[in-house]
Image (cartoon, rainbow, N blue to C red; front, side, top):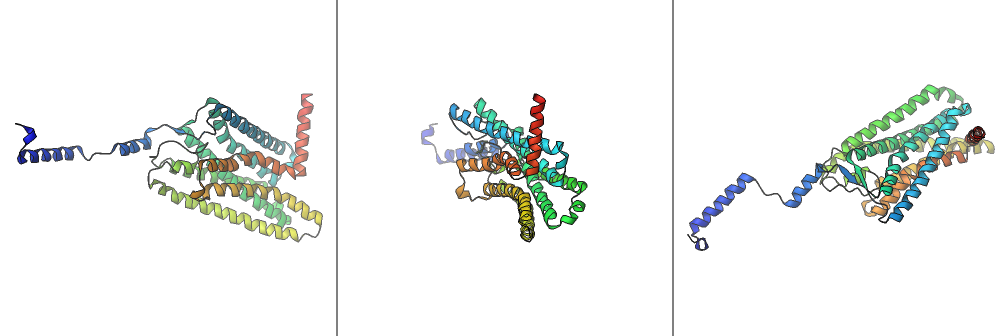
Length: 347
């Protein structure tokens, strides 16, 4: 039979057969959609943002990060050693400072060494499990540091506004409990964020526009609408962070009110010297982290996000030891004594 001149009956039969086959096989899925669906769980690594495309600029990035990392290791390591070895520094303020230095070392060690290694190896890959671990530890150390800075504000408040009761309120047991609460809260906070972030299906590929695995950049890879699951966690975290911020502000309002009532200029200067380093560290931490996570989308760009991430995740751990030792005579003396002992042993 010549199919070029098919009868209407034959044409209708072919169309019915095609419809039956389509029903059996199911609706056709476009190739782009199939690819998007398969990307949600098929990859086992993420691709991080390059600092530069040429080998020379990558070596420059490695050198800069190495200098910052060594400065952070040296500064925080000296503070930890000085506070641990000098019995004159076994006070609540220096106990919290020791914890802060440990957290700063943890924060910068979570992101910078991997970025430096990638620059040397001329790669940008990080494993899926490595990315999850990086997210967990970064959130853990940053959250714990913020909670610890809140505890340090309370310590300064008691020292200046309730000096006669300081020894009773800020005993060794109370300080250990406050530090333990900060570490435990940071751990739970990191566990919550990491579990929620990596349970969201990812459909937008595996390229992270940051030099480390950062939660906002990973959420950009999520399927359409899936990021709404993160909203509840963000509300809880935002409320907690705002509560700590209000507590710090109220504490310092009362601190400065009490300091201005001190009759002697020397007493006011000593009180300010105790508070200004902590206030500077809090200001640097809050301002950079707030801009990083709350800036409007219109200001977001890979280069700006990169600079902001360096400012809140890399610079503070290297700068904090300098801020705390600059106006602190007791810490300066302890560091000088420690360095002299080390030099004497080498001779």
